[in-house]
Length: 472
Ligand SMILES: Cc1cc2nc3c(=O)[nH]c(=O)nc-3n(C[C@H](O)[C@H](O)[C@H](O)COP(=O)(O)OP(=O)(O)OC[C@H]3O[C@@H](n4cnc5c(N)ncnc54)[C@H](O)[C@@H]3O)c2cc1C
Image 1 (cartoon, rainbow, N blue to C red):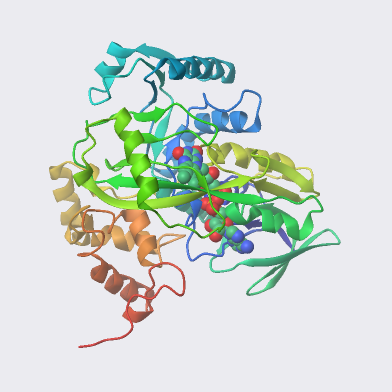
Image 2 (tube, protein in one colour; image 1 turned 60 degrees about the horizontal axis):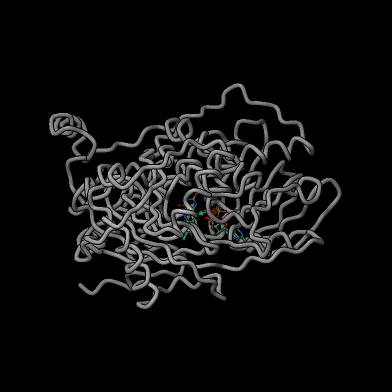
C-alpha cells in the first residue's frame, strides 16, 4: 500500500508533492496529461498577487498572503523566474475611486503593504498609462512568475527527492477500503493510505467518486492577447482595472520574458475543454486594456489564448480533509498560483492527522539551476559556449534558444518529452514565428534523445500527431 497518491500535477499538486517530499513517505503522483502543469497552471495571468483583493478572513485571503510571502524562498531555491515588480490598480472615475479606497482598506486588513498614488505619482511611474487616471493603488509585493516553469520546477525537485510521477495516467475511480483507498486508473489499480485531490477543473469528479458531499466545478474562461517583447520599459508594473464580481478585471502586464499580456475576460462556459477564443470577447479585452494603456501597439500581437478557472459553485477555495486521509483541494481558481506553497503547507497539516510525518534527513530543497544564456553578458556567453559548444548552436532564433538548453530540459527529472514540453521549459516556439523555424529541429532532437522515430514525436498528448511519415 502506498502512503499517498496525489491526483493532478498542476501547480497545486506539484507544490504539494514538493512540500511532502520532505517527509519519509512513499508518494505517487498521477497525471492524466503527457506533462505537468499542462492545463490551467500554464494558461493564466502568471501574477503573484499581493493579496489586497480577497475578502479579509477568507481562506483565499489567508492562502494568497501566505503564498506571496513564501514565493521568494521557493523561487530562489528552485531557480524559478519570478520578479516582484509591483502592481498598480487604476481608478479613472469617482465610482472607481470609491472601490479603490475599499481595496486599500482590505489590503490593510489582510496585512498587505499598499499605497495610494495620485495622478502625477502614477504617471511618473508609468508614463504610458492613460492621462485619465485619477488615483492608483500600488501593491509593491505583487510579482510576475514564469508560470510554465513553476509546476515543472516543483515537480523536478519533488522527483529529485524521491516522489514518483506517472504521466498519461487518468484516475477513473476511487473507493474507500480498510485503512485507506483503492484508486483505479486507465492503467492500474493502487491501494493508498491517503489521497490529495489536486485535479483542478476535474477535482469535483475526483471528490464525487468517494465523498458523500458533492461538489460542482463550472469553468470560467479567460481570454488573452500576447505581445512580443518590443520595449522593456513600455509598462513596468502589472496594471489592473478595478475588480468586479466576475474577477480581478483586465490587466496589462509584462511577463518574465519581456512579453506583454492583455486580459483575461471572464465568462462561464459549459465544457471543461473549451479553449476557443472569439473576436468579440477579445475586442472587449482590447477596449478595456486600451482604457488603461491607450498606446498598446497591436502590431506586436503574436498570439491569443484562453485558460479556464476551476470555479466551485460556492465560489470558495475548498481546502479540507473531507474524509480521513482524503484531502480535497477543490475550486482553486485565482489566486491559486500564488497560493500554491501555502496550500501545500495546509496539506501537511491535514495529513499529520492520518500518518506519522517524519522529516527526511537528506531532503534537498534546491533544483539544479537552469542555464540562462540570455541573462549572460556576451563575454560570459562566449566563455560558456567555448566549454559547452552545444550552447552555441541556436535552434530558435526568435527567443535565442540553443541546442544545449533543449538537451538539458529533456534530460532532467520531469524532463520534456513533447514539443510543447520543450517550448514551455526553454521557449523555442514562443517567439514571433511561433515555431515556424525551430519546430522541425525540435522534432529531430526529441526523436534522437528519446530514441523514437520523428513521426512518433507528439505536440502534447499522445494523439497530437505532427508528422505522418517521410516523403523524401
Ligand atoms: C484566466 C486565468 C487567470 C489566472 N490568473 C492567475 C494569476 O494571475 N495568479 C494566480 O495566482 N492564479 C491565477 N489563476 C489561477 C491559477 O491558474 C490556478 O489556481 C492554478 O493554476 C490551479 O492549479 P491546479 O493545479 O489546481 O490546476 P491544474 O493546473 O488544472 O492542474 C490539475 C491537474 O489535474 C490533472 N487531472 C485532472 N483530472 C485528472 C484525473 N482524473 N487523473 C489524473 N490527473 C487529472 C489535470 O490534467 C491537470 O494537470 C488564473 C486562472 C485562470 C484560468
